[in-house]
Amino acid sequence: MKILFYGDSNTYGFDPREYGGGRYPRGVRWTGRLAAAEPGWEIINRGLNGRQVPDIRRTVVRQQVEAMLRAELPLDLTAVMLGTNDLLLTADPDAAETVARMEALLTFLQEEFPEMALLLIAPPLLFRGPDEVWDPAFPPAQFRRWQAESESLNQGYRQLAERLGIRFCDSGDWGIAMGFDLVHFSEAGHAEFARRIAEELKKALEY
Image (cartoon, rainbow, N blue to C red; front, side, top):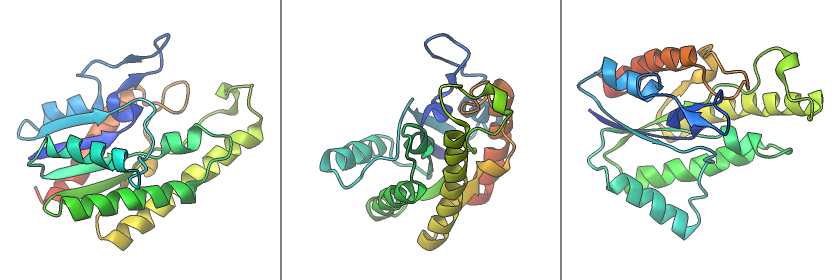
């Protein structure tokens, strides 16, 4: 099986503990753990720090996404886990807008790559942890807003997947351990995510 993961820093394997940012070793990252646990699967990591749901309506963006996937064909499945940065990188997060961009992306993928299975992964919920670790530069109300929109995003993704008839899993229900910033996976979080996503992939691929 050849599987591509299209995501943001938590797919890339960003390590928040390093000054200026770093990357967990391959053996720590969930994609690396998955590849080691399932040697019959070819795992392609297309995670990028800061990536948001691409606006597929823009011609240049559509061409970039299509070229990335065509370069890896044939693919048995492409899994998409995006949306965290769409909420986090603004003081006025809008889950509904993010879901609409995701719908445009997934519809495009269904039309352009009809033989390729799709899996939509709702990301872990934002800022689930003790209040005292939150950045004091932001008022508590802002964190509550991010939390609420994060929950709305995952609910919207579930409904979207049902509407489009594609596989879905909600990693917000998995209790993934996060680093001190409550945004990026800890090492333990990567291990748990690898275990849980392997289960979901076997269902999706009827493996």
